Structures are given as C-alpha cells and as structure tokens.
Image 1: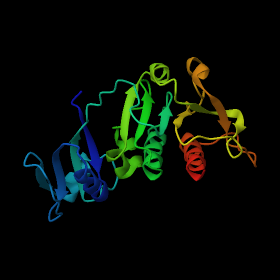
Image 2 (image 1 turned 60 degrees about the horizontal axis):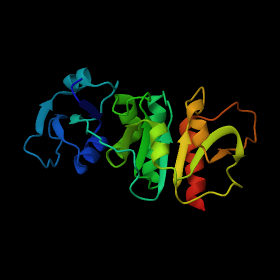
Image 3 (image 1 turned 90 degrees about the vertical axis):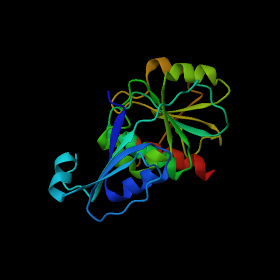
Length: 224
C-alpha cells in the first residue's frame, strides 16, 4: 500500500546503504553511525525500548531502516545468457529469502517469481535473505509467458521423480524451476520443462525443503 519495507539489524542496514535502494529513514540507537548517500534519508535516534516497539524482531539489533520497494518493470524477455532461478507459487517467506541468498552466493543475478508467490519484501523474507535482497533482482511475472518468450532457453524443472541431477547433462544457461512447497510445479508449466531433474534420496526423509533443494541443484549446475 505504501510501497515501503523494513530492514532490521545493523549489518543488513549497512548492506542496504551500499545498494541503489532509496532509504527514507533509519531509526538507530544513539551513536550508531551510518554513511548515508542521500540528504533525503533521515537519521532518527531512538532508545532501545523505542526500537523494540517498532521492530518485528524480539531483540532488534541497533537499527531499523525504512526503504522504498523498487518498481521492477520486465518485458519477460531475458536479455543475456545465464542461469536463472524461477519460483512457482512459493508460499514460505523463509524459503524465498533463502533462495535469494543462494542466488547471490552462486552469482545468479535475477530470480523470477510467479505472481502468486510470497512477497519478497515482507520482514521474514528480508531477514532470511540478509543483504542478498539488495544485490539480486527479484521479478514477479507470468511464468508461462516468461517461458514462451524465451523458448530458446532450457527449463530444468525439479521433480521427485526426475532424472538424477548428479548424472544429468546440465547447461551453463537455463531456467531452474522450483515448485510450490506442497504441490510442486504447476500443471500449466510442466509442458515448458525441457528436463525433469531430481535429487536422489539416500535416506528415509519424505522430501527436501524448497530452498535446500534449490541450493543443491544450483551447486551442481555451477560445479560442471
């Protein structure tokens, strides 16, 4: 509604200030210094009690920033070759944040989310992503149209019954499609999947967390 989001904690706030995000205000414990690049950013001194009242965390760490949610305009057409993460109907904010952090670690500059996925600027996602949210571009889009417009790029879909990711032929370029935590990849997207891949199980666990699975799969792509 307001187009704003919170960044909580000293280190994330410092990461935010290194980015191109517009920062409206920083609420800080007195004597906590920050290098701000815009005169429009307010530095507001508060007590620990006051900081705790405005925080979503039980024990806030030194500061909270109010930043503007960037307006991401995408034609859906990928301009450069590369590896991209795509999240279909992702519900859990912690998973979303962890996937953004995984993308940052493995040098993936853009993550696509279906329009019904969790909001990446909610406090839990921001917290899980750490500073990676300020370095990875997150785009909400119609995934069906995304794949239609980029039919030359392979789509590697993660499935329980796919081909073993450790023995599959993987490309340096492609979309890695991660499905919904409970229901997997949407039926309407399955026809766009070039290859179904799976992480083999060696134990008795029923399934893997979506973010854990994304990390394992991306690591294997980067290892080749």
